[in-house]
Image (cartoon, rainbow, N blue to C red; front, side):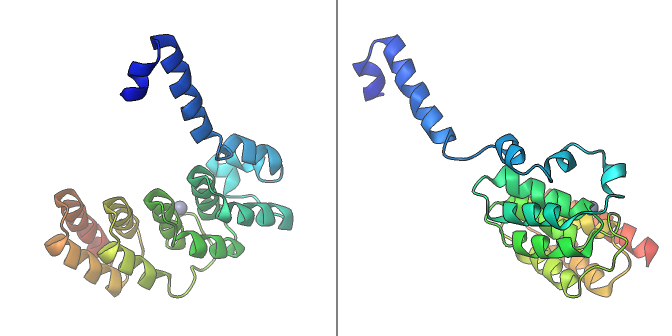
Length: 192
Ligand SMILES: [Zn+2]
């Protein structure tokens, strides 16, 4: 407020605008990153039915893997999203790394990919259910716990998942997630 009072209105606006712009230019945007990673770029806009069929090259995999370290969470999210949809077991390494991400949306997408049977014909990595159950029960973000419940609802029968859903249906702190866990448990029990 002191800054605003010290400048005529027009100048104060310019000052704040440039401050905002300085903040935004710190991160390369997803579009800019895609321009530099031409092998991955077409995948970002590819319809899912085509993406599911695509055979990824070493170059695509290398570029996708490099996105895991990117400072912009939108880039990391897209890498997790693509690694989920591309039916290739070499993408699991990307998902394992991103399921530790600081940003809940990125973490949730990567965790989902580790257990998403709908997107994969290759076997899911051993130990992925244990990681998902841990996230469903203990992740601090409701967004992540919610995503786990949604993922569990369509997962093939697994006693560890039923147990986790049962526990969440009774003890989850968020009412909406608790209700979804109960629904997911019923759905899971039907397929068991
Ligand atoms: Zn999926």
